[in-house]
Image (cartoon, rainbow, N blue to C red; front, side, top):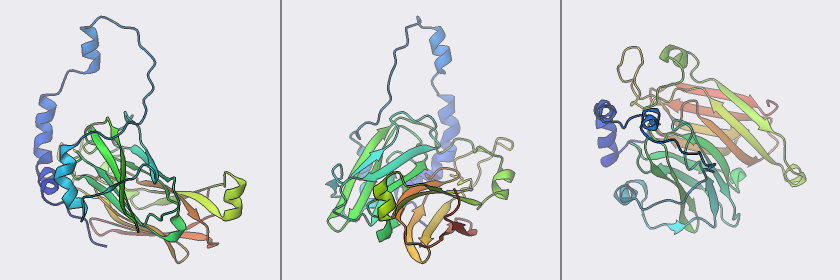
Length: 296
């Protein structure tokens, strides 16, 4: 796989973003607590935050040609669902769940795009037959209010579906560990295997697993809290998962995949006792693990 490189507007935004971030803070709105002191108290109303449809996006019109060979796409609402919070609790770890509802077509490729992120293409996945029908969850960074799009490739063409997410600061949010601790544990992996939830899943061999990889996935927009200098970008850009010799999926990732990446997925078990995981980051560090399916 090749290391994905931002192009056009994407590259320019990624280059100047560290220079602009201090200015953004200077013009930030007063915190909610300060505003509350200047306003009459009102009775809080219970409010349920739900996913919302995408909104019109001039940004997508600008970047679509960089992401797709043919920007003409079909409505994917009948093919798969995409679940993501309308208002994210943590902009640096926003969960995204793709669930295929129409199994008549095999999704062979999936692109996750966050329109307003400095590098909008978060990841490109390719899937083997054992991942059909697709059921995939991961976590992403959202830098400002934005559409999140899933672009699914099938033999019938490209299908798009998405959600609008209210979140900000995800790409520049401080890492949860100091740099020394993060680098020390980098590359450690854990597999969790879930018991079948139904008799049908048990009989058909459909299983569900989750892989977590310790890696800071630095975006290049985060600041070292001690030195006040920007931490250079360092993230997993290549990931491959096999069961035995059979490919489950591979991924080309960017800065929008969260720290300590997590991938939860459904697959047809072929009887192999292990999953093999191969990952490479942007500094050339290689991480290989053979994880027993007996772990849980």
